[in-house]
Image (cartoon, rainbow, N blue to C red):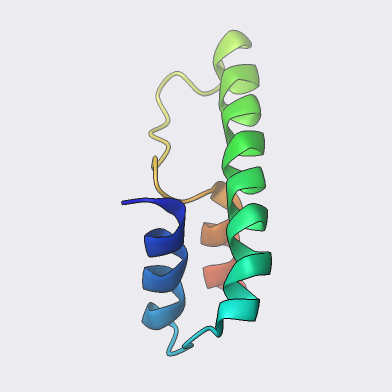
Length: 70
């Protein structure tokens, strides 16, 4: 799945149908979150803190936090 498909799928789980304008903003934001998640994962692993953690490839950690507060 590419970023567009992932964003649309996640929003549809929440009952949200994004417009093209929404997607133009959300897709780059999602891709930036994925990039920062990789940095965080690398940092945790290099400090032996995240060795036993499984990080989902398709969703940044922040998405899981958002679901908690929805």
